[in-house]
Length: 627
Image (tube, rainbow, N blue to C red; front, side):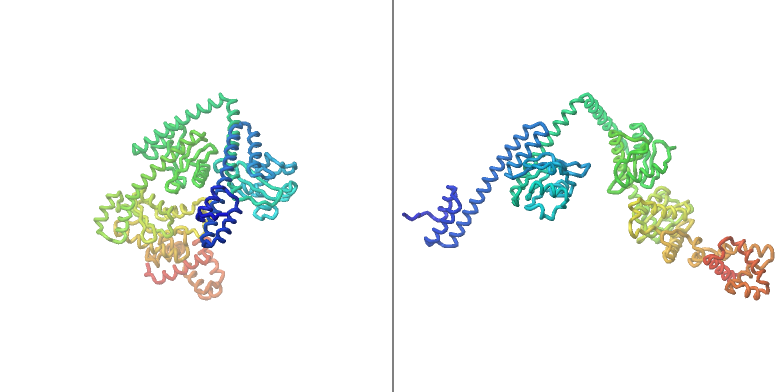
């Protein structure tokens, strides 16, 4: 026999070209090694040829599978009846994978289950009637996760939640290996397609890929069959469908006209009042625009107020960030930059068309508010710079007064100063709005907010700010460690120097509240009592008169010594006997005088806090000059 003179590579290629079996490659390897070829080169050529042969086999198998898949898809496309489509899907799946059993389940989303619809190779009624809760068994897990799963041996696989009824039905069919792939329409799982075997047999990656591809086409065919049935049912009531279509067209046209009118408001530079008026004309119902706290920003009916139901609907719409309809109202939230700004309230429950118009109006309101807020922020920066200059004295009084006048703030009016610690973004926004709407000024000084308002009661404004911060939605109440603002106030004052003095006084009041642990409180020097004196505010004689005035007046008018009795009683540690001896009076007389003091000072005068105030007032009276 003559020796083959071809190179080893050519000889391996010849085997590939002739599609020879694997043993011929091994035989050639042995032959080349015996002929004295380089063992490493010969082995490398053998391995490359074997790999090429394996890849060609994979390609041929894939081509065969794709051909079968295309034939199957073509067959499914010709079927119109739903039951015929389901039967064809299950039968073809069994044929494609050459498996013992195939079946298909459909999802019942309301019940949270997937139930058997069509089976091939199944013999027991128990299996045909199985319903798998989402997440239970292999099929329930596929239906829940929309991912394919395969198991070599179902009963030993701990990935699945095994239920006794399901396992009993599977055991009754003697099923061991199962593969399930989702039937998907978009991202929605409508069912599960299965292949199963009676013996333990692993499903290869290629099997899962083929089944998944088939399931994708099968789902489309199934969906098409469903759509054909739905179309047939819709055609049975063609007149109603036509009327519905006409209403939709009219709704779209009406929405377009509403959009043009609302856009016109923005283009004309209109505000929220203009938008509310336009929306009232379009929807033929009164319209209100409320801020996040329920205050009316604009209204098409000025006499229309708000009630608790309005506020509940408002908070629900803002918290969920979608339109809320009910109780004779419709509320669309106004959001911008991920923050709720306001809401549009309509005094009727809207249909789908009017809801779109209402939501479009909310978007228009957001645009108007963002533009206005941008303008306001620019002005706010100017006002903030002025306030800082006022507080730290960067310019003369005349220059500061003139700048304030240009910004609409009159420093000759009675001005209140508030210094706020712990202001969150909501409080900062509220102080800015107060300053903008009342010709005042606001600024951040360090980590605190300072608010200057003309002709406003300082304590009342401070309480309003604290209440505003505490008026939160239910989700906000659960926030851990939430700090309420603490407010020190002063005023009224006038002029540049008065503002600077009031700022120092309000800061001292704030520091006193924080030192006393009264976070979330509001106080001025007067409300702090003797702490106010320590802060340097008020006349000591006025403080004495505020505490002891009724008793002093009684002694002065009647020539009695109730003050002396009170001093002695306190000096003797409130002991009646020793007090009587000191005053040369019977203890009963001391008691009678103290009863008179109690009637003059009011109920609760002997509480520790009140007695401390009385004691300090008596001591202060001793060191003051006699009137």
